[in-house]
Length: 284
Ligand code: SPV
Ligand code: MG
Image 1: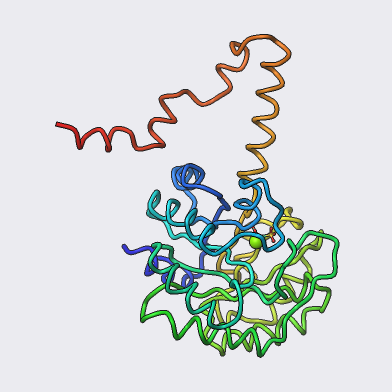
Image 2: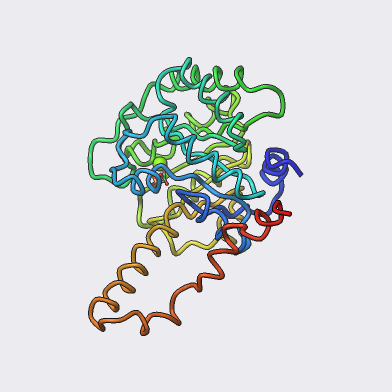
């Protein structure tokens, strides 16, 4: 099934959709083969992979360039983290058109002031006026043709310390403005605010959550409270940084690679992830 239809359908289901953050196509293939339901092209991960901080430096072209390879590589839905949408409503309209062309299933934009700062940075997190954000959502909806790329509206009200009521007010407006799903983010160590949001929201539109800091909560618990999607946004990148560091330290200290040989993926596995056999089959 087409990945956009698949995503629309899974957002309507009671069972939670589990999605993992990536920054490239290889990572996306690992996510797919592990059995997850979708991939999140993470602004944090893509920025980090360019050696840059997650502070609104990525251009639309850079982000959609990466997203294009990701969506080509997997058949599960791809959701792209488009930060604040690269400008005002006109920029969001173009973003949606270009994203549709790159084959992704959904774009996500957030209600912060440009240039945004990653939600976990200890800086003043400034929100834009909700009506201005709704104008971006309207434009995105209008630019998408029927059944085209989905629009996820992310509120940073909790991240900005504005409380659950403000998050609910904004979510209501964003859903009315045509968002296909609401992402409610939190940087709290416990899930209380997100759980309260879910209880009061009562499945009025699908809700996406990102339990990075409140990681003890399980997908099942989130599902019970009414969340439609959970994103493990940066765990691939963080585990890769850790694993590569450990492998390289072992090589440095032991003087050869033989100690690590049985702890790292064989080259054959890399060939498989690259789809080598299917490409070679074009040769007579
Ligand atoms: C990302 O993965 O870039 C996100 C999630 O937006 S977070 O880093 O938690 O803000
Ligand atoms: Mg991001």
